Image (cartoon, rainbow, N blue to C red):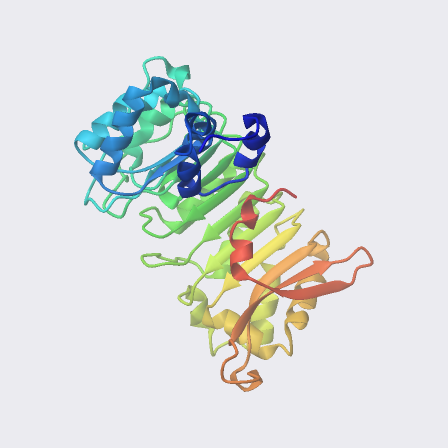
Length: 387
């Protein structure tokens, strides 16, 4: 049914509708509404399904070539054969595309030779701001990275079937404007020179490089780094050092960072100290690991190792740990300290209560510490936050 009011009154409302299904329903109401909703429908496109879905999408674009220009964000599941060829043909036509996401496929051992990730002949026709690559190894996507010097934010996590040990390095002219990087440990060791990276997250799962080699590579970005997040959790992580040693190593390489985040699960070399040192001694060692840092504002420490659990069990409360850490003279700049606190079994108020909780303590302007329980998920993306 055609609108009874001028479309100008409806258009602002469409910007607040996030559901593609609802937008599609509105689009079918009339030709006028169809024209108004298409920019919103095509602004962000996500294709997670099978080959027919992608073939239909590309066929529709070929009939309406102006729609190529409406796409600003495209996330596509990597599929081989004809769907991949069509993506290779159409991607250079999306000249207003600013974000590209390559969704992990179920296809085993997919590589850039199985599908086409195009390198535009005219390099600056497509100028991405961000790229999320969750499948292809460095050797398969390096030429595309080279064609996109405008990329400022990059997620790079190759599939388990890829092995980029011999993929070579990332030359100086590739990704020159990179400021936010979320990657596996292998990629960070491939850079031959520094980049203006301010926020860095490294995931060790399915990483072939040695942990100490990865930490050593941080020094390349010493002058620009503000935030470092190290995810040591997950299967396949070979930890060569315990958590305090890793923290000290990071501090020796990038002493001026403002935010440090460590995620670690229950398997840690630190567990070797369990039963040898008491909780108070372990806490002192944990605090001492931060002496290399000069300007820390925020520490987020999510750890379930036996050594950390011993520290928690030895403390009377979460605030006792927070005061012990934040009162150290070398941490006088520390404003926020968030950590996973493990309660003693006999402190459970009832059988349904959790045996751990994430606490965040903030130093107020008067020096007092204010603590609260926070959702762990709320802290997961804080490594990107500006201070």
